[in-house]
Length: 421
Image (tube, rainbow, N blue to C red; front, side, top):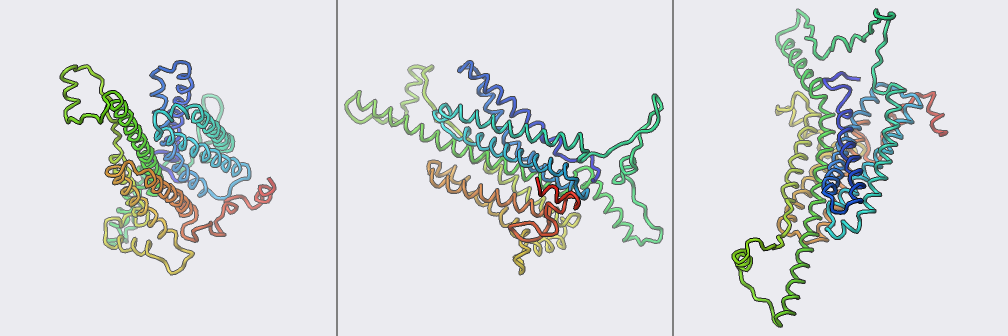
């Protein structure tokens, strides 16, 4: 397992905050049932939404963490079974939490009240799945040593001292390289360049691939949050239109004719009574969130380019090599990089369209639903292709390569036992 400034990876940081916020939000939502007018309900709903959405980058960082564990070699049967259960239950819990958060975020006030109990039950079910998945991870780490470097001790009593592995004690990523005296100046410069790059990218940053995967999770979270806000604006506009229609019908019934239209009715009302309550139209900054989602997604694409070209990132040689990688391949069994790039571009395009819809056609619910379904499909496909590339590199789009399937990660002696489970 590689040594980094933050060991073993960012997953150990990103998992705790979303879970803590989500759990506290669910608890406050339960407490708010006691007092319907409690301000805790507002805080609870924001905590649930933020906790659920931030669980997405926590989940994607888990992909990078699992890849680190895979690099250690063959797995024992129990460790593999526990990690598989962890991934399964945490994935189910995350998807369920995100679904409940998006529905609650996008619903009108009327439907929020109607769906309050079902959404709370869904959040409790998601919390149960996450708790179960967390138990499997804890058991795998603390009882089986998954992703943990064991430090042995020698001596007794006060003279006990740790036997620290050399790789852990000396931090090879931070040690200056040993240069052969016979090396040419160009070779010396290249060695020093590689050392500085590895120290920055692999040690302090945590690796190009890990940063790409984590930021991809944030891009998905921002996009899904913007999608929920788009539906919220749609429902708020429909509620406002309904309120206006009812107000006009009531005015017609009172005066016996069509309502009088004066542009400064509200200003006149404020002049006569400054404290008059005039119901404003709810403002939802949807387009801003879509633009933020596009920005984060584009940064993620740039990081993907960084993964492929590394220190040649800013050179024309690296750019042309990148174009060759993402070009349409002749062999249809090696289309993962091409599909990954196309799906990323498709996501950016759909996000831009939804930003325009939110700005110019916010009441088109069928159009909004259509592009939302397309975006969710692109996200799911992008995550699948990303998993294939992370664990299996290039290959077919629908399945892992035969030599690198999950069973290849297990100890060959233990594999038949797992198949019998």
